[in-house]
Length: 76
Image 1 (cartoon, rainbow, N blue to C red):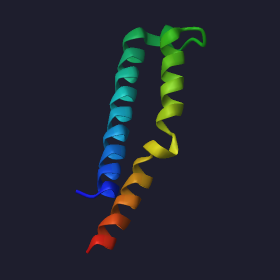
Image 2 (image 1 turned 45 degrees about the vertical axis):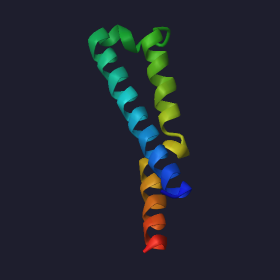
Image 3 (image 1 turned 90 degrees about the vertical axis):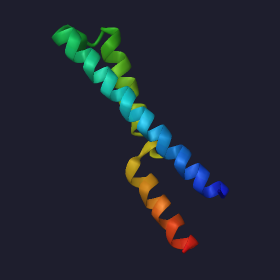
Image 4 (image 1 turned 180 degrees about the horizontal axis):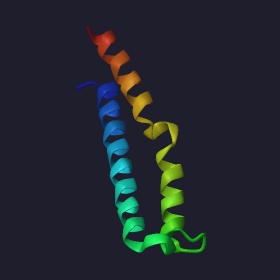
């Protein structure tokens, strides 16, 4: 498998991991109730930091799929 395809698959795996981490943090917030959303609560801080990080362009599912589609078209 060529390097470009490996990179695309690796980025896809990272985006999936980020999505799973956000889902886990959402569950933690659900379990902590409204006190988990207090600005000083550690869970809220983790959720906020993970939410920002998961929106980085390298983890953007739409960008990854677009780049992978371009890769597939070039190899046809």
